[in-house]
Image: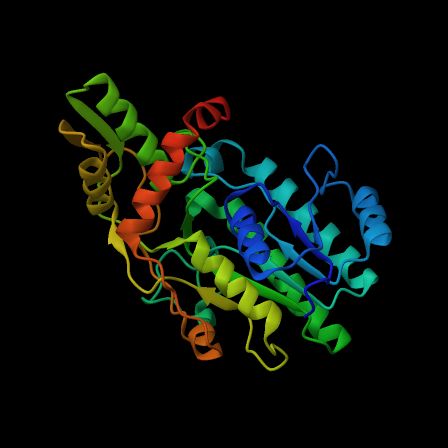
Length: 318
């Protein structure tokens, strides 16, 4: 790679995309192609084709898509499938036609079977039924991953690299309790409960499911390593996880302590838990040379501080 190569980051204002932009800028890359949603509708195939024809990017990071928690997934499954399938199909086709040297697509750990040996290796994909509460999203991401592999197979070049990060968190996350993921949603709910002096806070499920959380700076580091390195013989797809998990109950207690909330935490066991555990086997990516470096509790504090610094914008996006 050269520092002047054109790199298109689709979804550059989002959680993962913004972290990739920060890292690329830190590395001295000066030719980043950044298009906001208002300027480029990725679900519009014609608009995507025109963008690629005009700009001819050398590299693409596909971090755009519709994401959300259990409530969003259960309420808008058709919207999730429509948006994610369209974005992936449009960008992959345009990237292929434009001769992009390398493209990284972010898939999801939701693709794995609900009941899956832990830690989950890439070979377990399609070996069982995914978690029903996020099935539409999981199927759309499986399709995107398979499209990458299909292009590589059909055209004999391993240019499209599907990566499967586990639960990401960090600056620019969605902190809306209704549409955000569990960690960011808990930060906001405990913050507001602390501010109002609430005596108790009720959370969904039993608190027993275990999740692996990975800070977006680690994801960005892996992304840049894959862009720079020789990926021609890598076995794909690639899991991207921190290597350790935590129960939702432990997470809630950690966030409550960090924020200073001293009220009771109650659990509504009538609400769904989701998959019982999601811990990734990231040995393929580690063998390539990437290692996570972020400290979980320190990264959690940094994420909360970002929320405090941007609390008005975070509330406005809800």
